[in-house]
Length: 131
Image (tube, rainbow, N blue to C red; front, top):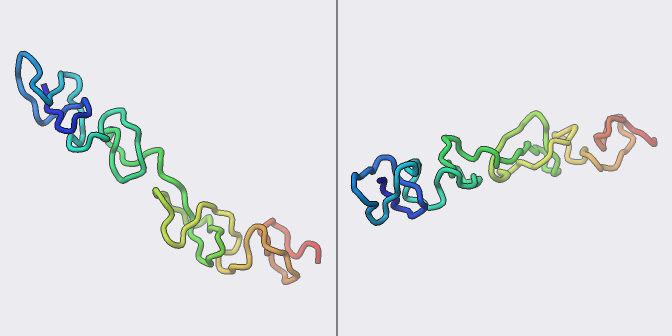
């Protein structure tokens, strides 16, 4: 039997005990795979959360739950595709899109008003359309 200190039904493989019946707070063979027996939310098969912890005891942290973010150097709310990171939440200066065509100019981004200035202000691939 293995100690189940957090009561999640999974035992700590480093804490075995031999007995004819399971002592209180111990689990039977086959359940000795808890990778953090001090946290009842962490055990094999648990839902992975974006928290910097291997919640499901598979050896990977935050797999499948990290979000994509891109740098927004000009502060217009539109990100630069060249500067990407994955995290649980956006850090300062990061946004959830990579659609800015000029991250040095805050007035240049998708949906911006196109003006006659020989550049693509609205990031649609056309320069000065309608001028």
